[in-house]
Length: 139
Picture 1 (cartoon, rainbow, N blue to C red):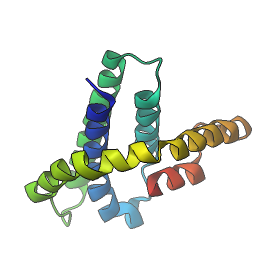
Picture 2: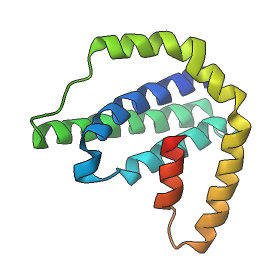
Picture 3: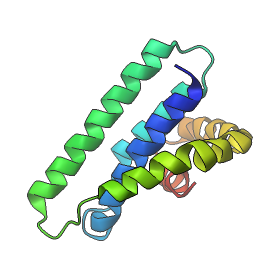
Picture 4: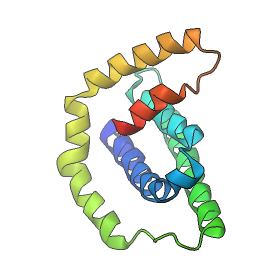
């Protein structure tokens, strides 16, 4: 499986996550654990030392985590809007033509972000640096 396919899976999962998280972010705050999981998965995808099966396993866990997150939110809040199939269909069209190409064209910026994140994490007693994860989420 190519990196573009892995990126497609990651961005599709992020699209779903973001759709639901944004509906409750003012109440719940950001879900830094899942945001970190997206960050770490993207690092895995870009790493030349990770096998395709390792990346696929990591993405499967991430996708399951997103589904559990959404299920918990749906059980907790009755005002949530459901993601419709049109949103997913639009993503399918965009991912090949735009999102993955755009990410690949600016991936050097992500590489620099990873270096910065690792450097800052040495001085903070945690890998979950919320300020940096907010910036990753915005990216």
